[in-house]
Figure (spheres, rainbow, N blue to C red):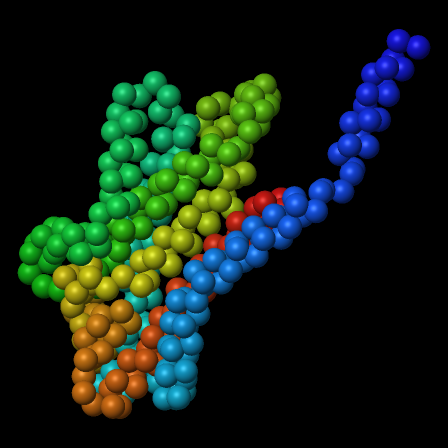
Length: 293
């Protein structure tokens, strides 16, 4: 009998919550939803117009042999190969360093005084303009080797990719519950074993998402490659020679008055856009999979 008043109160609250909203509230809800959808469509309009412009202009001149011929033969295969090569070099340089730095910031830096400085510098590098990164790579690599090269371009892209990988790795590791760390310690796992066998293994989907986003950003950069890799109309002679890339090809030939060259630029834009979208969608799929798991 003591619980009867509280049960009655709970029933009244449940009935109140299940009542339909007043007409004024419903109208307000529909109005706000309509405004939100309208503004979202307005925000997507520039993106969709850019995509339509690139696809409509670039698809007309696309030929299969363009994927196998260099620029000197009216193709862009050397630029595709150069972009993949320099992004790969940047990934090889930045991924190990970025992951280890993220692990240090998330797992081993609680009592280390330099943690805040490392995180602060990483955040600053994230916002540095890419042209400044290109100038830095020019001074560090190009002047040292006395020549433009794919290695210099890859180094510049690595600097751009590094802070993204560091910050995403740190956040992915922080999302792992403390209970997993305690469970590993309770079973006799050392700090090293807990970090690399339990925590890092659980955070691999999030880390991979950050890597994919960093690669997608680096693949579309132009300014750093102008200062480091320069350009080449034919196949590259090696890692220490000027190397073509898709963004620089578009930059160099966009103002060319020749209609055939201008058409090649629009077709190249489709390839670059497809490459960037591939890595962006890959990161989305990995993030979705990690949420499901």
